[in-house]
Image 1 (cartoon, one colour):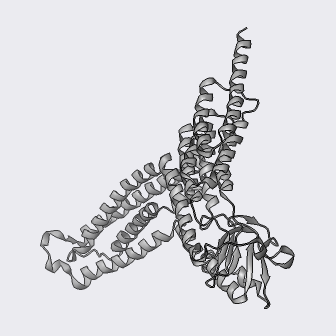
Image 2 (cartoon, rainbow, N blue to C red; image 1 turned 30 degrees about the vertical axis):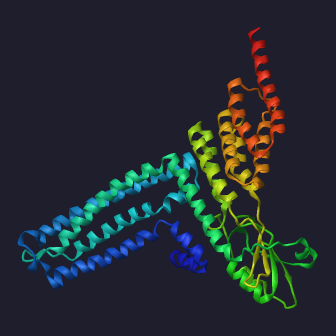
Image 3 (tube, helix red, strand yellow; image 1 turned 90 degrees about the horizontal axis):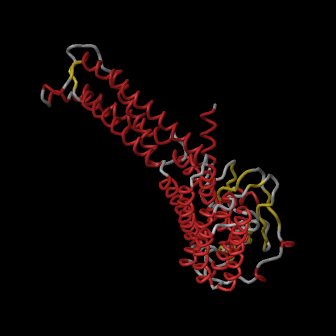
Length: 465
């Protein structure tokens, strides 16, 4: 019953969502290795018992039936033991990821191609050797070649794969690789989304008067609760073109909605449309996914940094901040921040509910700043990355970068600083002020920081007296 439930669930998904779900499961890749093992076993049987390749090879290569059974029984036990050690290592890795970094990273490790191939090789090797064991007889006159040779090669492959998996797990668990892989995956999501929306973005100004007012629009509500995971924009635009309507998303991709929440507002131009056609192009599920949600990638990286703060691991926090800054740089340079999507006739069809760069900057850094609790080392790392972003990003983002830094400095209210800490914080702040043209505001923050140092000195003098 459960098997058919999952099959039905996958069939209901869109092609992109189904591909993402299958990648995040641990059984899909091993299934194909098992299928390959069955086919290879059948081919081995064909070579030994139909073609009888032993007639064309030297005598010393083959095995008799009884000797081969002993060999295969040993190989079955050996491969099964290696598989057990691999699964145990996998469970240890998943427990470590969940406890030390973030439970959201479990999907990243399970969906990693190397992890899935390793599990597939072990499952396939065990099935292959076991099937070979089934059709070997006890006859002394039986003399086979392909079965023992291929079985031994399979066991050697499994042993080498086990060593590779231990190395792969140890490498993957290193902090710089974890944060880099998460950053790279988020960039792939961004690139995929940009490629999808590229045909519908035009260098065309949209005036406010071109957008109808809300009272004239009709609302399409969700019929289920969950996260807005995927929207098939191509399908929506084609349907909107046929119905001659303008659509506006009232929620963002990745946002949680309750059944009955307004999802879309639309404006008709004469003919009556069927809202169900548009709901079929939108996927709502029980969890957030990275298929079209850039914000989710930032949240996962920020959660790794927050967990590291709880474990008093500043190097992990700093490394994660670097990867978040790189991802923010990629998001900020994206040319697809425009919320307007046009059809082939260059007519406006969809208005997205899209956030600007300041929103992503806040999602990436604000929670780390909050949990850092005035930790000057972490605050300095944050300001250093913000200063670096000001060197690479357009002037449109400079206001947001400076405002984030200014609020970070003002957060030191009622908090005293050591003199060296103040100097380290002011250094990237000075660079940021020059790059963004906020030298006057910097002087105010400089005085503010010096007051914090003075209060520290005063408290030290009073305690010594």
